[in-house]
Each structure stands twice: as C-alpha cells, then as structure tokens.
Image 1 (spheres, rainbow, N blue to C red):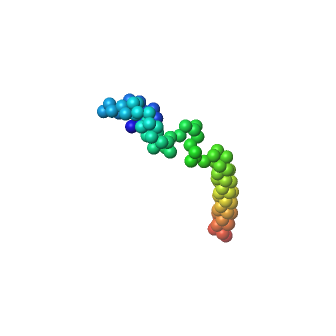
Image 2 (image 1 turned 120 degrees about the horizontal axis):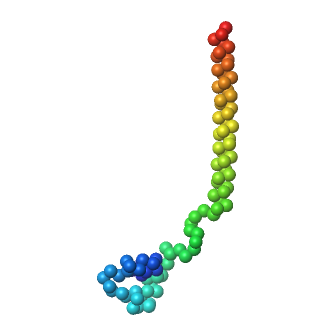
Image 3 (image 1 turned 30 degrees about the vertical axis):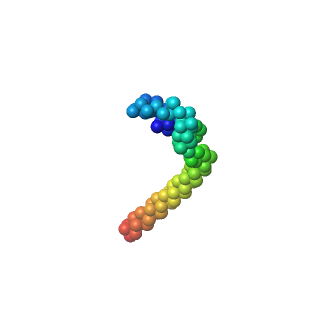
Length: 92
C-alpha cells in the first residue's frame, strides 16, 4: 500500500479505506523501507549501460560490418573472375 503511494499511484491506494499509511508515520516509514530498493529517483537506470559503452559496441559492429562488406566484395570479384574463366572455356 505504501509502495503505491510512493510511486504516485494515489487513486490506487487503500481502496478499502484503511488509511493506515496516512495516519501512522512510523508505519509509512517502515513500508517505505520495504519499497526503497525498487525505487529509482535517478534519471538514469543504474543497471543500464553507459553511453560510452554503447558507442564502443557500435564502433565494433561498424568495423565488423565493414569487414563483411570487404569480404562480400572479394567474393563478388572472385565470382566475376570465375564467370569469365567459364565463358572462355566454353568459347574454346
């Protein structure tokens, strides 16, 4: 119940009108301590990856993509050479 209050869910609090969280300050503090580990007042999720790590991963993948593109280009070149060889052989 107190967790709902601390999360701002005012209209979902105490539908049975027990109102203990509003009347008993110690009870409210105790309930807050139960909810505290899951509350996040920071603008950034503490478990999320820092932006610099995202950028590093993006650079790594961009490098891998460039490598794959070079490999693909090499395969296309080999295929073209092979086609020319086959064409020459068929013309003999």
